[in-house]
Length: 184
Image (cartoon, one colour):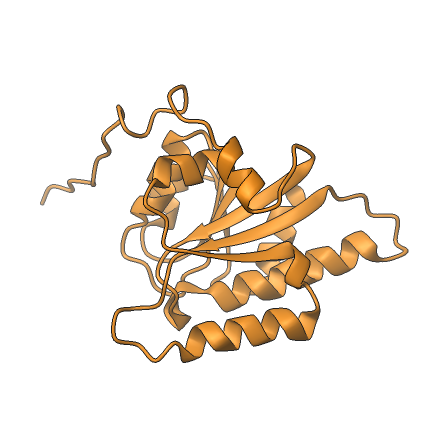
């Protein structure tokens, strides 16, 4: 048995050739803002709900009286719902963001054509999927020199090693994700 992992076109995913500042401005993120992003179709198995809960927790910490100093944060979700879906899940995610009152900090960007530019605009990529066979998106982010935080499923440990190339967290655990994001 031989394992052949997917590869990347490094001439396309080259951080020296891509500027993410235009995307950051489109998302309302200045130079002091940390952009935590997710790329993937909008679907319950992709874990967008987990990221929103972790975002709410981090934002609550940064506005609490505990004297925890966090930078300004923006959470960007790139992707659209699966073709033919009824867009109910996206509506649920938007309602959750409104319920937590974090609308100014969460951007639903929709489909983005230029993924290298998106990855370059992120300060951290999160893959909170509850099931993932191989996270090509994580490799793309890493190629663009973007730290990754992956749900500990599928090949996550293969991608990040012993947390030397990225961090992992327990699947579907917003508190675990929140802790890893805070540490970064």
